[in-house]
Image (tube, rainbow, N blue to C red; front, side, top):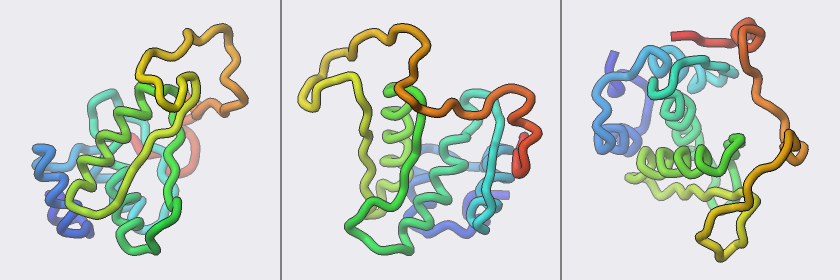
Length: 145
């Protein structure tokens, strides 16, 4: 299977190509069609296997077809570094579209470019922890490459 065989807009396929992707990874081959069909997906795969594109491409595809000028998608992650990494990935995948992405996180002033204060203790500010470990793999819709 190639990316061109997936039901993705040509502008997204151009973004995929601009990032140097040629063939979907196993997690992408299984997750993208499921997400595009409207199914909930929980994917577990190692770092560097393409999980971000596996959910970002279906998200961008849905956003292309909907109304503009309002918040329509939200990705919640546990760290600002991961938020910036995902933002960059989404921006690059959607570079041929007119969709916009932004990151929002706490710990730094709105105009500050410096590092945030160090995280202390186990308090996550009321943020839920994502499912992890063996129990997460048994949840309905879990996809493993």
